[in-house]
Image 1 (tube, helix red, strand yellow):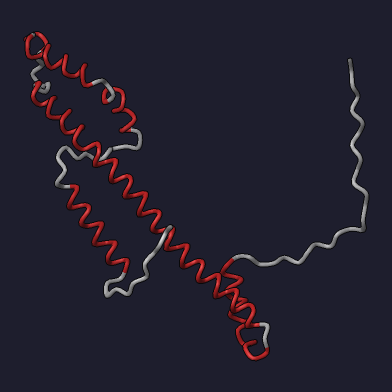
Image 2: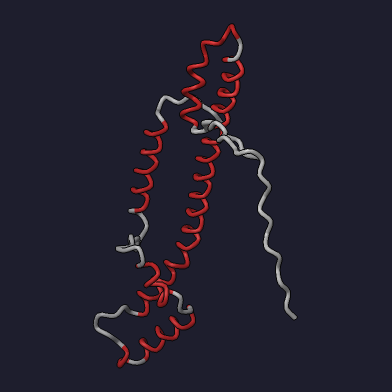
Length: 176
């Protein structure tokens, strides 16, 4: 069951959300090796080399440690490569959790919009009924404004021509 608590706060939701964003950005500074992609397709371009197996990576580490011909002056040491693999293994679950939290925040936003929309639709339905009564007929202009804002304006039915029989489809010829 989905519930949304309605609470009175001294800080606006906009201010509170902005504070959470600032906290998140400060928090990201604490994550080592944190890199924002430079382009939309950068992550996809990294995927080929990023998907090699840990066994393959370790075999290359052993080979570099034992074969000087494989040592590159600008290449990472086996210890640095092992640290990168350790980092990836440690932070991958964090990324999964953050994605789940993002889904939960989106759900919470939709649940709040649903509650607000349901309340507004209920009020609209009540105002429609009350506007038809003499004692509360003064609500009619408000109902018209609400109808317009809702975007559900009833269109007058187009005049339909007198009953005409539907055209009959041509018979289908069967060939054997």
